Length: 447
Image (cartoon, rainbow, N blue to C red; front, side, top):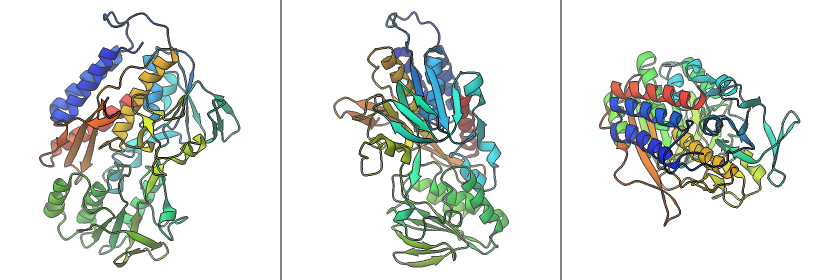
């Protein structure tokens, strides 16, 4: 049985570690939080831990990112191996979207943000299948794979991330090989990096940002910084043009503006309220509402929606884009037995679509599923947290942190007032913390 007191305590320690400190103390508190998570698998003699039936059954998880991989590990760990878990993921290895802007900026390689799924198999007993899901039958509780196999489940967890809507921009569909988004880490990340390397000094890189909400990280303003950092070192005559559909910088505005003024004056030019109408992929030309812009490298991030895997569920999407879930369990509203995590969900107020938040969703869902499989009511949702780090150059970093808690009256998750916050300034110390965060969360998911 997942012990509620320890689960809440774990979440609280992790929240304090990042939101209150964001400095050296954060790593110590994060380690304390991981120890408490490990303690969940031990026998508990707390007074509130009454003897209960063990969970059983089969959980199929589709998507091995920050949400799906975490859910797979924690379902096995917290159930003492009594729940069978099958993870279906189309890619052979996990590649992280957070930190991927460093690959684009030439500070890291793709190998630096790639982690194997092997520990999920060998250490935690997760069946990992490299395949694609081509059909879901919630009534029969079945998942059909591209290679022809059918998986039956007691509970289904989908962590499909985002898909893009290139049809909203004339000329973009089918031309992502010429006008990349690089918003899913992997081949597109490498493609954009190679385009920048091939660009002549004195050339123009143009980035277009869609209207929020969108997956972040990778963050668009961080990306502008990392490309400018590369230009400053190797192509100092080049320009970074940022065309933002939003009316203003949507995150860490003051910190980014300061970085642009101090480090990239004359390199980065920012234009808000810049709706993109169409692109000419062959000539790398963007038609914006106020006129045309031609670039040597055109990086268009299209509008986003829940990964199209969720279309198999047959439930209407909120705003025609996102899955509405009960954040106490991450169960899809109106569809018992199916849970959706991470970026694909209709975000609660001020809840970001981030890898860190997907990791938190996964733990809430795993705890709830174990209780449900054992015939018990799930515990109330604990406090969850988020931290997003952004590099402003190869070493200096800023962060934003937030804390979120279930509000019984509003029946949703709301930000905790007075918790979280942003960096006072960019620093190399935070740069070390950002890389420690990455290594820690990858280990939390996959080690």
